[in-house]
Length: 234
Length: 234
DNA sequence: TCAAAAGTGTTTATCATACACCCATGA
DNA sequence: TCATGGGTGTATGATAAACACTTTTGA
Image (tube, rainbow over all chains, first blue to last red; front, side):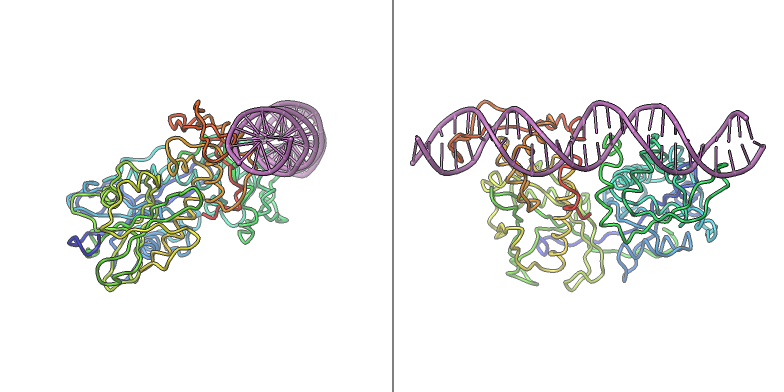
């Protein structure tokens, strides 16, 4: 097929869906466009591909430009290539979703973009097909986090079990039994209990844990079926 | 970011990973290139994107051109955009994987492409990064089929339990207990038992079944954990 | 009547769930 | 000392896995 048809050329961009967690809600980081068209509207961060970089490299560059952070958890989501995605010219885009610790982010924020966090349940209108993209990203996050230890990326290095449980409850919009939650998470052997406690959020205090992802493959199995499949749609 | 940097233009193609099952092995359909460069080498079917179509539409077009078939199960796999994927010029490609009933295919085959089926365990060398793409597709197929009723797409409309079991065994390269396999599959409520039997492959004969995917969402849960997670890597 | 493969039944161990209970602390 | 939330223990039911058993047919 290639070689038989004439090649066309296309504009090619990346868009980043950036998830964070503030202790209450799962949040999305969006920026306010400072240029036309749609100046002043909310949008995902994105950028055009350069000649010498892959989409992955472009996404890393875009993420660093906004957050100042390297080495974020990042994953290719989907390529959106409908001729009329919105906007005057046709742009093909590969979407990536990223998970960041909202505290680390706030230290290095690049205000030039006019970024803002929105709760995932109260998103503003986004330009082009960005709302669709975000919906897909939410589904994928739920799906993948049910099977893999992913959500730790949204927490600080040290976190407590109640924090972790709140995070899962925010992501899946459901409640878990704390006893069963603890057992399940500890049975993965991915967590290491520290000696100090967080005394700020309760009287008794809750022990801190860190995650040891080196044990990932061994502990993987126990993540299967973590969340009942009715909460997974993709 | 968009609007600030100058846009570049890129060649954009789709590649199709086509899986089939011949009753013995999981197979991949590849074509022999009839043009330079790499004339005579094995390759995935692909094609350049047209101005007025999405990548999905292009993949459907390419699949129909080769197999003569519409309405195949098809899913976007990944976008490959490394600047040096192989070949002289840079081409960004979105890969799709498709599942087809090998019998239906053989009726409408387009010999112009010099297509051939290879067992997934004995693949020839493929051009560019196509071997990498196929590896990723295999992983994704295993992953997804462990959670979703997908593999039916590889069988005729009527199939027997032993056939279905052989298919799963080929895909996961392991053996299942027939009693447990039957129970598990029947518990999904996705299968409808027919009145006639296949008397060709055994003395006793095996009842035919059809799959009723309308019951998909209801029966989904039971597909979780179908295959032990150690066989899933993505 | 026997071999081969289809299909069913049964036992056991493991795991998920629900929920009762105990513990440590600040007010 | 009591209310609060952290953390542990336990009983129950559901499910997965192993494997023995029965059924049907062609040779």
